[in-house]
Length: 558
Image (cartoon, rainbow, N blue to C red):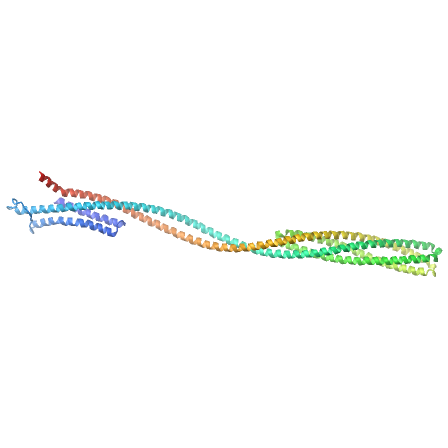
């Protein structure tokens, strides 16, 4: 009886242990609430009838011993049921029958519980395997999520660098756009300066053409002046010869005035007429020379104006060249050449002006001398006409004529030398005018080349202007695109950081799940051990329950 009671207590303890294991599995999340209740219901459904049946015989024996009820045996042995021990025998027989019945029911219940523990063992093994698979999957998922988190961190770092690069690139694009705008403005100003330079060069070309025409006219005037001076020189030489003849004649008149007397008056009159004619012709030639000198003075005035205008154009060209910078070096060289040419022309013009003034002064003196010679010739004519009435005065007149002829001779010599100087000066003027004409032609050719170059520069500047306008427009578009890209990169960077934080939270959740799963695996292992212990207890209990039956069977066989 005590053995049965101990087995009963053991059965109840194992049932409670199974219930605790089921609750532990439910706590770690491996079994659902419905599955936990189902396992508990199965365990208690199997254990409760056994426990109930086991208490019935004990209740009956207790009641019989306390006088509250009889112990009845359905088929008592007739020999034992007689006498005073009959009630006890019957009670013991009934008790034995009840105990046998309880034993059989316990054996059946233990068999069923053994099958259930086998099923629980299979379920526990399956749960353990699933927990291990789940743990491995969680660890694999954790590693993958860790790699993903590392990749997200790398992406976050890359997006941070990309955001910084985008900001720097945006700043660079803004600087490039500002530089493109400045270059476009400078190109606009350069285009205006080139247009002004082209206009100034066109004006300079027109002025150079005017100067070339003036120089050509000056060259023609110089040639005419040289020709006139040649004629003047010949006339002066003729006057000089006539003056010598007059002086010789005056000497002969002085020495032989009385001897020749009236006989030479006719010759004297003829000579005086010739002198008068020569002096008149010399006066005309000298007057023409004076007129030519005034014309040359006018030409010099034109040359001076052209020189002043050339100097002004050279100054304008130098200013434009300075404004054009590197592109104006050619203009600067041309401006320097024009300035130097203008200075040489001005210097030569001053020299020519001085020479012309000297020629004009000498021509004025020659005109005065010619006038005086003409007056003297007229007076000589008068004296010759009056010679017949004043022979006494012939000597004096001859003396005066000789002196006057000497003076005329000296004046004619001086005029000849002055005319030669004027001739040489005009020859030099002609050569200088030729040089100026050649320089003007070269300058004209250079100006045409400069005009062509300036037009090319204007065309190139126009292309550059259009290109810079397109570049400025493209720079603004790039700037706007970079601003959009920067905003998108900032949003991507923010989203990446948020994703990184989310991945950290996921890693934390995965770690919590892994720990819970590990606890579930540990619980499943503990459950396997508990079920194995329960199986051993059931085996021992079955052995104890079935032992009396085996003993009775062996006793019956003997």
